[in-house]
Length: 119
Image (cartoon, rainbow, N blue to C red; front, top):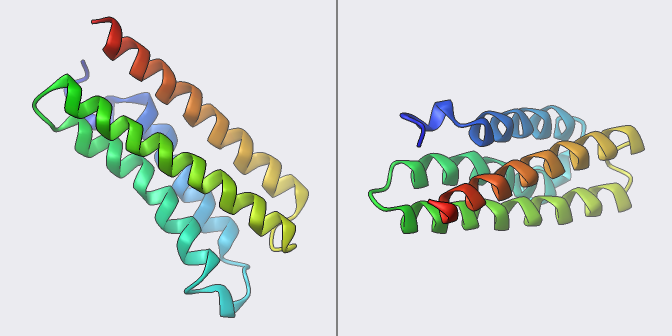
């Protein structure tokens, strides 16, 4: 296992996803600041945060639980990206980029979960 959560590819990619979510939501309407903008950002932040917290736990079981929480937040984020798309807050290129990055984070998380279960 990695010495630090900062060594985990899943964490690094999830932080990149958070950064992109913040960049893309800067153009959202002001009235969404406490609505969809906040929800997107909180869901995104939850992903690397859960990875980091889980890696810091004592047991593999706890780590798996937190990775599961990260996956849940990732699915929540995907739903919110779709809603932002439906409302016209994001252009199609941004939607595709965010969904592609989300899918990559999901693949990495699944691989990490699989590797923990195999040990």
